[in-house]
Image (cartoon, rainbow, N blue to C red; front, side, top):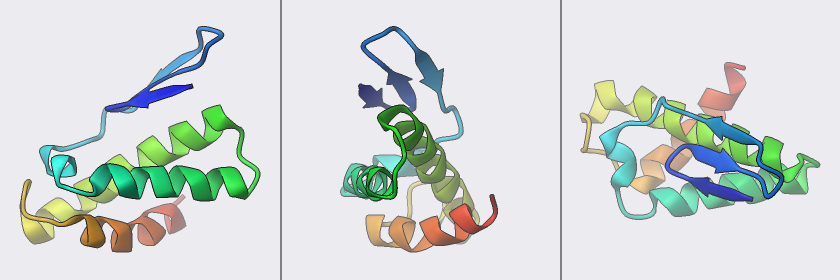
Amino acid sequence: MVSLYGHIATPGGECWREESGDAGLGTSGSGDVRSGLLAGLLSRGATPAQGACWAAWAHAVSGQRLVPRFGRIGFLARELLDEIPHTLATV
């Protein structure tokens, strides 16, 4: 399983794309937030592909939701982390 910048691929050739991300997700620690989200989803029973897709989506949408408050490149990883539960609650 590979998950990189919204592209997810399995060894069997399945592929998905999440295109909701924003430049602000390039902040230090943002990838750690996404990795932690994936680990949490896996621990709750998601398959690797499901977890990677949900983590990519929640990460990207949470970043989008922060833009009006902090600007496109003005938020921190901890603010992204705080936004994820709100994003998941909208599903």
